Length: 281
Image (cartoon, rainbow, N blue to C red; front, side, top):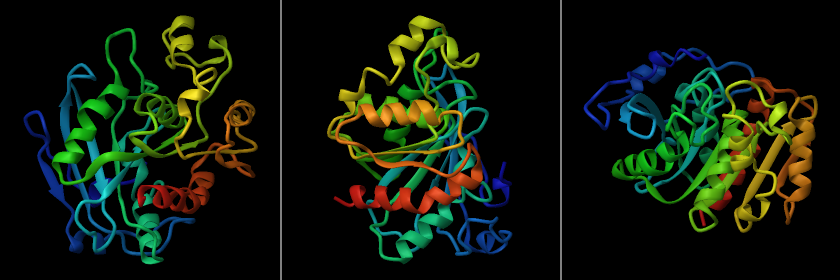
């Protein structure tokens, strides 16, 4: 995991979080980016936390990355992390999406912000038997928080990795084409049968049946969709099947790679360009 504390300070507060703005002096002290991440100065990161009713009172951290020289009233790409991760995974020395964003906007793409939020280790971004619902947290709590911070959340992008890739597709079925401007599912956690899922992903066969993306492909109609997976990834067969079931075919595809950060960094430029093209409309 990246040492995000060198660039951000999570500050607690009552309900909606206290906030820390990352100074330029702090950014200047960041180590050189890892392999595959652009060596370019990113824009500001702002971090905070809030107490989430949808997550049964869990303290929920978040970070927003802005492009350099960000204009007012940006739209936003919401990133959903994978199992065992948290809101820090999108930035810094992990995926480095803040640096990819800086490179993208430097090259002339339409600017937007990127926001990532804690969803829990095994939430799979949907309502669970204990009453928690990280998907509802995103829609009913996090998007309004982003709106109060001046971001345009009338239409949003979603990008998810692994567990978050499933989550991005699931939340897209809830938001619909009217609100989901672009969706990227990367190495999505997909299975055909409840018995194939790992412990904790779903609360049994009924929960799996209520939330599987297979059979709900029509609910993604009209949403600009990109689905990527490494061809050596264990999720590749199910990803290939889902892509084949969606009309028109989504952007992206299977390409050389595995279920790891090297593959995700390599895919980031094309995925962010896809998001920029649709968020800018």
